[in-house]
Amino acid sequence: KNEVEQSPQNLTAQEGEFITINCSYSVGISALHWLQQHPGGGIVSLFMLSSGKKKHGRLIATINIQEKHSSLHITASHPRDSAVYICAVYTGTASKLTFGTGTRLQVTL
Amino acid sequence: NAGVMQNPRHLVRRRGQEARLRCSPMKGHSHVYWYRQLPEEGLKFMVYLQKENIIDESGMPKERFSAEFPKEGPSILRIQQVVRGDSAAYFCASSPSTGEQYFGPGTRLTVT
Image (cartoon, rainbow over all chains, first blue to last red; front, side, top):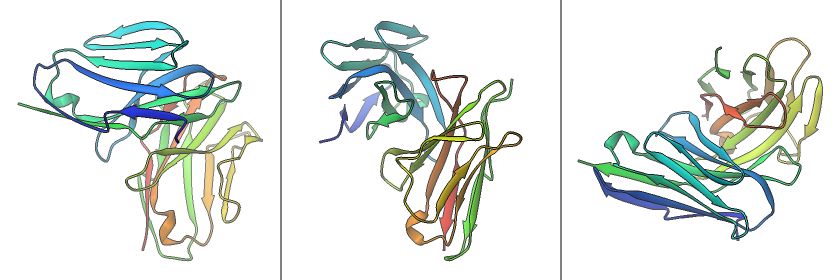
């Protein structure tokens, strides 16, 4: 079993829909990243959070440390949001990241 | 402030050749991390370096792979005698300390 699990693995949505991607982890963490990767592209950090909630534009990330769960929400989705979204965690005092396998999102017109 | 730079962006090597991948961290960042993304797989940690020191190399294959981050110049990930299974995207990230990491655009290595 992976230390970081994401669901769903694949997600298709129509433009304008509200999207939720979930991340569960089984280890103690100090912080969690949500990352975005376009096909053949680089990796962009969307959020780093260790508690509560963060919002940036149409993106919202929440984390519940007790339940070892985080969610990424996209409001009013748009085709340009189509990408792979990756959850990654910092474990303990280590600086290395452990990654989920990603959620592939496709937003259609 | 330029982001994390990686070069080359694409690298083709024949089996048995050496591959050198470079990573220049963001200005002011002294911590560098290398990650590998095999085709259709998730990202995996390889190595964590600070200037002139390897801090954690627990994700590095035991043979043929090495990494350095000299006092001056970029961090280098070196793969000797490449094999087809080394074909992957290699990402570098940097941070100012043990905080948020910023990723480079990656180097896509193809071994023919």
